[in-house]
Image (cartoon, rainbow, N blue to C red; front, side, top):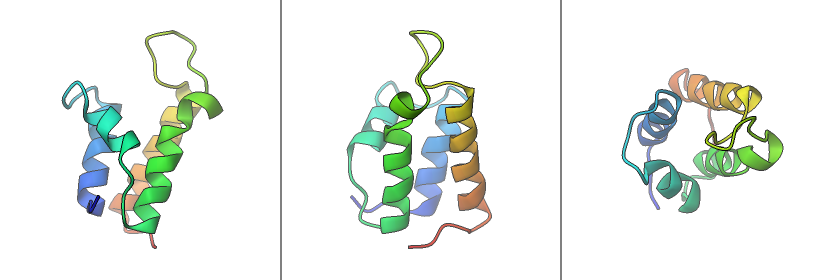
Length: 83
């Protein structure tokens, strides 16, 4: 899938702030992205539950995982993500 940095940033921001559609996060983490740098972010997000297990069953990951998403988002907004 072709996604822009802006689109990926929006998925991350929506996830962090409990916005977006019911399947948006699943779509983001499940569909490969052509841009290698954005694909690394997608894969990083897709593996968060295994790397940072949630404390509660209704969460996706723990606070360390959320911090990683925030770092991905910061790097996208600061234009520090490169292919």
